[in-house]
Length: 168
Image 1 (tube, rainbow, N blue to C red):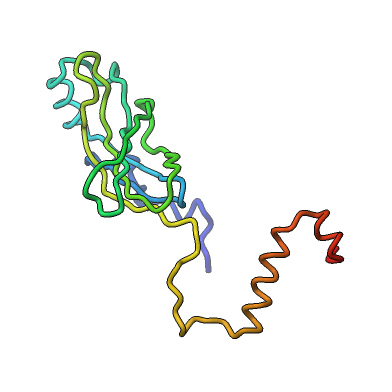
Image 2 (cartoon, rainbow, N blue to C red):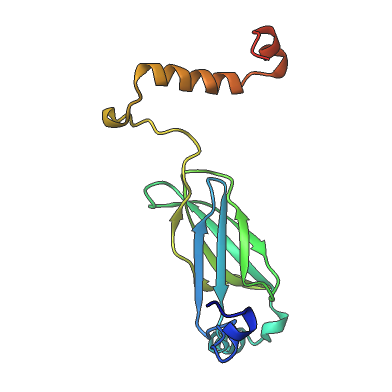
């Protein structure tokens, strides 16, 4: 017998909204977008307030997105995204597939520039092309391959071109 929603949740523990820990996690969403989420603990907020002599509520919070080359040896570029203090996650348009990225959460200080609070993990966005690797064990028989590529080619035709060829 299944319990109703109210009966199921009565007496059960509820997951907290915040855990009082510092973390910044970066995930690739697709070849062009990233997703990040974070939590800044009260202890870190207090440390930062004493470090920069400013109240947490007055800070200009920002994400600094770093793009690295494939070997992860040097930074290619970075850009900043201002985020509201109430935010705890953000979608980031990275724009370049098959690259490595890292995000720093920090604040913009008038005289000192960007001050990092914490750094994320490094992720790689997937490619947006087919693989160059051709594995014989996964190869399609010739008749399936012809049919498959015919369907791809047909779907890339304009409506007028399909009418001319008698497909529509």
